[in-house]
Image (cartoon, rainbow, N blue to C red; front, side, top):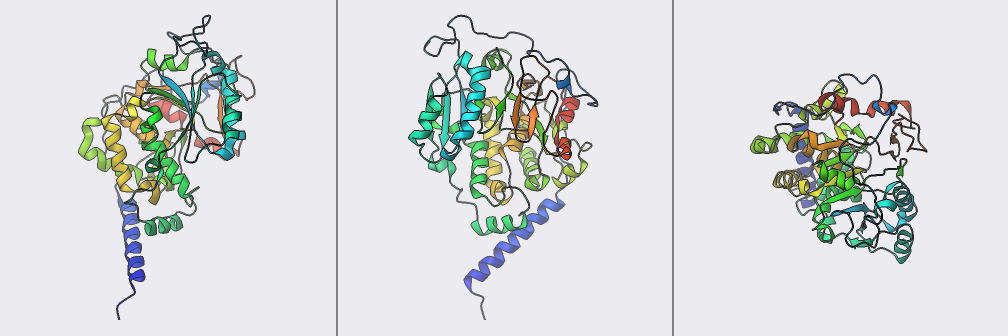
Length: 398
């Protein structure tokens, strides 16, 4: 007797998921041979002492500062460049968003008055708009995420997604479809928003983060003047179970697109197999090191490049944003580590920052409210999640 159609479909989905997991298990961890990596700045072979414990000043070189009214909010010919402060946020997060806005305005933006852009997949309430506008003198815009940017792609099989959730149920946020949608959007959609089509630089700001240090120079002009593509504060390890298929998918992409690899890439950081060997093995050859993207200052021309667009499309079709829990942080980091000159990635060591449970806290008289050199205020075992030593070893302080 023939099986009912529903049972046949379930059997097919189960076989598909089983084959996918076998692929992840037996995929060889090697396969990408790095071109020579020159790195930049001072390299630390072993981080016996956190560099943040040493006195921290401003980065060297040209720095643009407030001079009279050159950054006044109503100055249409100001020294501001084509940049914005950017946040994806929900109406229910108003209190936490105000915490972040007030901190960044107090420490930096009240001097430079760069515009804010808030994005939401639902219309903002008047309460939210009123609260945010009261926290800054700068221009503020509120926009909706286009439906087609947020929805689940047509090629994602919902039965396979549900089975994947069950298999990876111990992976944080795996059962929250909206989290998968957000990671996909942050990976390959945000810079395509109509409100950002003519914007080059952005500073990503999330709800409930803290900024501790006065910054007296224009960070966007710093990025432009010093030819930087990306700026970070925190560099950590990811959960290897959440990205088990990401490196195999990347290897598959590079096999046909190795012309995108930059000669001075950071692949040794991406493939470090010493500091957290277990992560490297579980993630099939990926160290799981990544820039924590809840803070990032970037040039959107990199995301709009052909290399990144082709890479994102490849990953999107692979389905790992839903069948696993690929985050925008490892996706951004792998792309930067492979396709960009490592010397164009900058550690903003002088910007004090916290996103629970991790810190970047410099040793500077301009900082208050955080403990110098502290990496986490959580359990002590969280200290092993610090991937800065690997970055400093293979790339340098920059």
